[in-house]
View 1 (cartoon, rainbow, N blue to C red):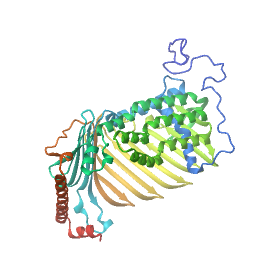
View 2: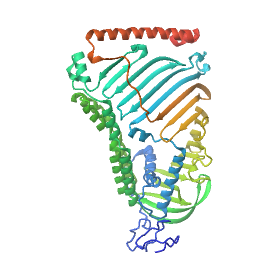
View 3: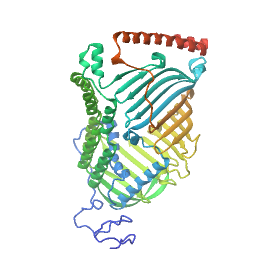
View 4: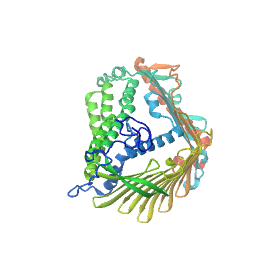
Length: 564
């Protein structure tokens, strides 16, 4: 058989052309077995449905579109099923390609590989003296630094936290794990000695040290616990389940081709082909059930219970903790809320518009709980398809507008984005959030700029502006921001330095030169340790007083100590 659209030769038993996706099967006599030729359903039935309020109405409008959008942009189709399916797959491919060009690392893969290093630092660069009435520049250079190195295969972990002032460490703490051995050290408080315990015998050791037999059964290995946390959430399996849920929802969708329609797509007059789509209530309800099943992998209630039980904690303590956690069943409450919304909506009717082979618009209108709801998503309209995105949500004339434009596909080699979120009441803008970002993946330095602003009724509330260096590989990211300017109500508040790194762990040495295991220490040794800790803390406090006194002006020191 020859495709009647593109002329491609194909088998007689193939309904859809493998080249263009056009339906080539004879017209169906089944009275609408083909979902894209089926009559559109009549939508929600009126009468007697529970009121849900305006805020819930906004959620209704969002949920009405979310399910189809998930399908549209997921590319979760086993084979083409006509023009709309081809457009959905092409849309998904375009956004995936743009994401790949930006080259951001896959953090989930690092976690699944059980090899990850992270570091973070925040440093004060300046405080506006007009805010406090006196010069605070002497405090510049104060900061906090944290880092973790995790090698699950070697069963080693290094976690560090320190406060610093310029190049001088004010206080530092280090925790090391070597399989079941745990060590804690602090140069300022413990000197060069690390004190350790075996976590698999920690309960018995503490019971012997304290005489409290209630903890004697406590035993754990931090790497076994991490394995539970990582293995419990199988991202690949979750993604597979989500694709299956999307596919099932897609198969239940009914619709028909409406014809040509010209729309304003992000400022560009665009000729589109319109499809009227109906998502049955039953299918939406099943989709919520499927989502709840997927989210159950993130049910931290069961996860924590498993962790506590594996640690050998007393059951009465576990029951007490879990009883408190029952109040935080986030995913169950979310699923129940979604079911209420689905029941309120009934069958969801959408208009999906296609242009140039891409999904260009998804439109939804309905009246729920006495409120007129309208939601519109616009994709494309600019020089490149992925460059422009628009979202409009209107509830009884009040609107939330999101507009994003820029070189999202890196055609110029540089990612740029300008995004604005506006909240309007009538014709007035109540609040606006704006973001401007630029990333040059190929530049080695000065390749990252970002500005975030929040306005209310024309008054600037907050502005955050920064630039710096961003280095990205397939499995790492290093962001260094030397100047992060923070302004409030038009006045500069402070300037900060910010560094963040994430990447694979290249191995580490967690050995300590001087280690004392607490389980092997006598009562006299423990008393000596307590005395040493107290003495070192007093010395440290005195040293900090001396240090701050030598570096700070009398005025600043007085105000910091006495608050005036």
